Length: 183
Image (cartoon, rainbow, N blue to C red; front, side, top):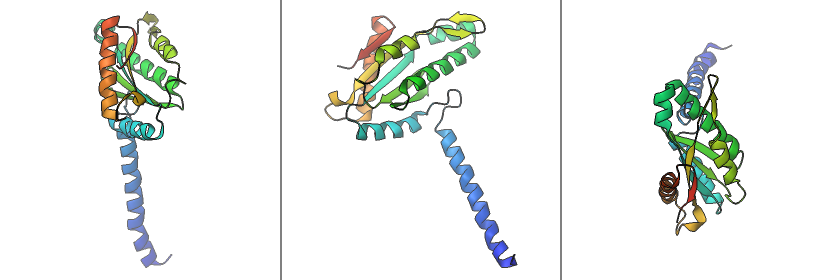
C-alpha cells in the first residue's frame, strides 16, 4: 500500500472509531441502566413522534405504590428488583404499540398509539401482581394516571403529562390501586 494512502486512511479510521464510540454513548445515555427503559430524553423524543402520527395516542404516568416501604423493609436490592419487574411488565404490555420510559425513582411513563386498542385493565392487573424475590412474594402495586391526547385542546406532550400526573394522584388518593383518567 502506498505510504500516502496509509497516512490518509489512519485519521479517517480514527474518526470512524470515535464516531462509533460517541454513537454508543448517546444510545446508552438514552437508556436507564437498571431497567433498560428509555430515559426521560429518549422517551420524550419517541412520545412526541407518536403523538404527531397517532391522534388516538394516550400518555400514562405510573408510580409504584409503597415503594419506599418495600425498599426500607426488604432492602435496596429488592427495590431494584421491583423496578426491573415493573419495567419488564410495562415493556411487555406496550409491545409494538407504545414506548415505556423511566422518569426516575419509581416513576414510569408510557405512550401508546391507541388506548382503545390497549387493554388498560390487563396493565393494572400485571402491575399489581406480586414480585417473587429471594423465595418470597413481595407486594407490588402501582397507581396509573391516563391522558388521552384527543381530549386536550392542543395535543401537547407537556399538557398530557400534567393531566396524567393529576389523574395518577387521584388514583393514589382513591385507593392507591388502579388507574384514573384525566378530566
